[in-house]
Image (cartoon, rainbow, N blue to C red; front, side, top):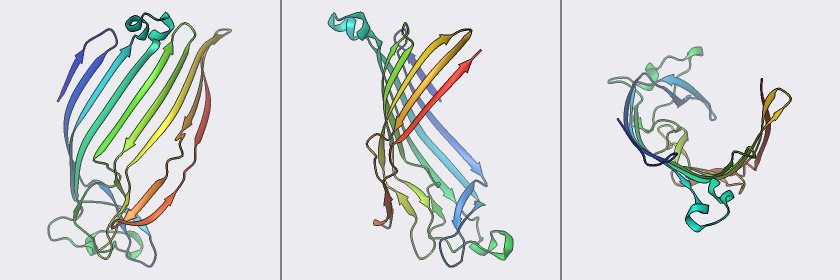
Length: 225
């Protein structure tokens, strides 16, 4: 179910509700062995439901504050989602020994038969401030992306799941579109995670692992004939 409202030439807002059911979703499990060895298997079932809100608004600063028309190129976009997921790993009467794996192996006894889906956060959000000059062919954007805590590695009957803690990342993006001979070109440069936000994993509220992933730089050129 989705509701949309357009309240300007390029201004829009939407609100969506969704629900999904999965039969035999692919999930992560720990293999019963020495050391941390993981595999994927078909769980029994899963369901996912949530709500998503989007808004995009032009910011005609020149019109609002009687400035030079160049200030009319700003816009802001915002998106937030709440997602509730639940996976049932084993069916009624099943045990970890009933999950078929190659090589005579089996998954470790489960910490819990019901949990959130691997990698699925409850909250996701982003906000983007952009500037566009169509005459010059340039676009610049400042983006903030938020990811709530999520399961990254699963535990077993002796230890809880390993959680990646909530994290916000800031990116910068620049695009330049121009013509050359008979081709249209787009030059794109991106700096990701400009504040080098740390990744933190915990297990049972205790530190498990953390590291600085660094700043990611990308440059690309696209050609259209």
